Structure formats: C-alpha cells, structure tokens
Image (cartoon, rainbow, N blue to C red; front, side, top):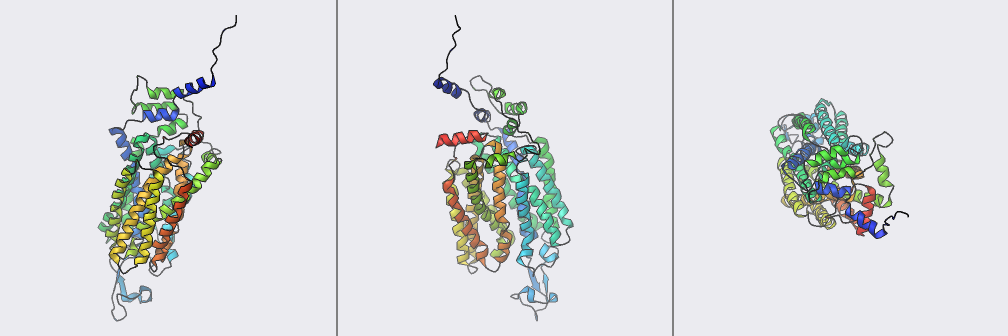
Length: 507
C-alpha cells in the first residue's frame, strides 16, 4: 500500500506563507524599542551633520566681501565704486587677511572668480556623490563610510590654510566637497535603518537639528575671529571634527539591515538582541537565522551593481528622475538662501543667526508633519518658498525689513520641504539600493547648487539672478510630484523585488 502524501492546495500554501514573517517584518519587530542606548546612538551618528553644516556654509564668512572705508576723501566717498578708486584712497575695515577677497585682492574680480571656490565645493560634492555612492551599500558599509568621510574632510580643511591664491583655495574646496559628499547620506540611511518605522521620522529630525546647530555655531565662531584671518575659521571647525571621528569609530554601531544584506547574520543578530524584546515567548532575532539573504560581494566588478540594479527597472528609473528633478529645486533654495545673505545689505552675523534660527521651527514643523502625507507637505512648503523668493525681487532694495522677512519665510519653507523630502527619499527605495539612491538625489541637489555661487555674485547687482531664479526653479520642480507615490506609514523593504511587489499590491 502506498504511503499517503498530504497534498497542499494553492490556498494552503498562501496561508502558510502569510504565517512566516518576511525579513523586513522581523527587523521591524526587533527594532520596535527605542531606549537610552538607541538615543545615544542616534545623537552620535547625527552629530556628524554638525561639522557637515560648518563646511557647507563656512564660505559665508571666509569668502565674504568685507566692508571698507575711505582714507582720502578728496578722491573717495562712501558711495563710490571701489574698482574705480585709487588703491591708496581706501582701506579694508579690519585686517586684510579677514577674507579671501581682501587677502588676494579680488574686490574687482569677475563673478566667475569670486564664485569659483564655493562652486568648486559643490562640484566636488557632485563627483563624490557619484564615485562614492555605492561604497556604503557594498564594501565599506554605512558606519565606516561616515567616519572616513568626516575624518578626511576635516584633515583637508586644515590643509586649506596653506593656500596662496584663489585657484589653490578652490582646488582644496573641491577636495573638501568630494570627501564630505557621503556624510549626509550615510547619516540619514544609518539612522533610519537602525530604528523601526515608528521612530524613523523622529530620528530624521535629530539629524536636522544637529545640522542646524552646526549652522548656528558659525556666526559665533566667525564673530570671535572677526579680527583674525579666514584661516582661523577652518582650524576651529576642523579640530573638533577630527576628535568626533575618533569617538564615533569607537562607539557607533553598524546598520543591522546592511549586515544582513552582506550575509553577516550573526553580527546583525548580536546587535538586534540588545534592542529587541521577547514577544509571545519567541526570540525574534533568533528567527533571522532562518532568513537566507544573498550576500553582496564587493569585488571591483560588482561595486556599482546597485546602480545597475536600480536602472534596470523602468519604475525605479522613472522614480529616480522625478525625485532628482525635485531635489534640484528644493536644494537650490535650501543652500542658496543662506549663501545669499550678503546680498540683503544686512548685518552678516545677525542675518546668518536669523536664518539658522529658522531651522528650529522648521524641525518642529517637520515633527508635526510625521503623520501627514509626504507629497502634499513637500508641495505646499516648496510653493510657499518659491513665492517668497519671487517677492524678494518685487520688493527690491528699498524695503530692507520686508525683504529680510520674506527671505526668512522662504528659507523656513525650504527647510521644512527639504526635511520631509529627505525622509521621502528613504521611503521610496529598498535597502539594497537605498544609500545609492539617496546619494544620487543629493548629487542632483549639488548639481543645481554648482550654479548658485555665480547667480549669487550676479545677484549683487540684480536680485532676479539670485532670488528670482531660485523661486522659479523650486516652483517648477514641484510638477514631478505628480508621478511619485505616497509613502506615509509604509515599512521599509530590503530588496527591489519586495519593493516592486509592495508597490503593485498597494496599487
């Protein structure tokens, strides 16, 4: 007599699959708790943004046009154009080494020359984002890439003090931009992959707050060193960053999601056991041993495999193009408005402080937007920012108080849109390509900002070339939101197949 073999129907198989949780569901349940240790990790990782902000906006002071005064009132007056005056008839206020403009005699240089250093910085960010994008997804991981970027950026920031002209200075700025290009991406990805969906938005706000603190620290450092060389700014911002890199290397832990993607289950489980709790008598982290995830090898031929995987699927390609165009618009205002504070004709120290203070209510607004849909939030604040930019052109230079207020509202709106936008990027793509996609979007952001320094220099004579262009670009970029999906409350996926399946199910 033949042994009877139970036959599983298709419906039985489907029910059985439903009882077996997927790897991303297991990780979500394991990371459900957020205690003091997780909070400390969040602060340690996020503080890299403090130093990233300093290097991003340090040129506000190091590359500024300093004030000057007349020595010979027979040949000079306060309303004179400095380039038409004899050199002996005027002098800089303070030491000539205060900024690169005064030290190297660039007061009459073209917009190209004066805008070249900061443009080189963004060019370095652009190329660095492309070349370093997949290293955090493959060979180095999130933690090592973050620390390496922060340390090398800081060392180069010290070496820049040996520049003897604007061309060498611009070359150093390019290297700094290249090395810091992965910091923001690694911080955001590492933070969001170490917590569950419930805490994802909250840890994102901590990152923004640390970036704000770094931005707010610049006016204080610059004011204390206002009678010193611009080189002092780079030294005082670089040494603490080197110390941070050493501390982070010792205490920061790697992303458990990345460890699993690399086939390092034992390390991931050891990490998750410290944060998970037993549920229904089952150790969730132990269940991950049953999950077989294909290991991503980091050979020279497979290093950029995540880019190939990303662009091999039409839905991912369309999504990437749309989100990159949106990033260009939002990023141009977010980085352009602080760099353009010198065009307001207002005290440069107070102007930066007011701009930095706008980041705080922006973080608060972002927190309350956690349970709101992503697309409408980005749309509303982007349009508000663009309208205020255009109004700055309409108001002109006559009503300085109104113009300053409009610029602050525009920056606040751009900050809020940018904060939500960064979370939105994380939610759009799975773990296997998340660091790569975030880097590519940041690459698009810095591509737009390559032109910002030249626009800002031209805007000293005509506001349309700075504020006007900023407003038009950010409003036009919002059109791409039409083709992007909503992601509020959706759990993160690990692979492209899981993401595609989830998208098809939601449709």
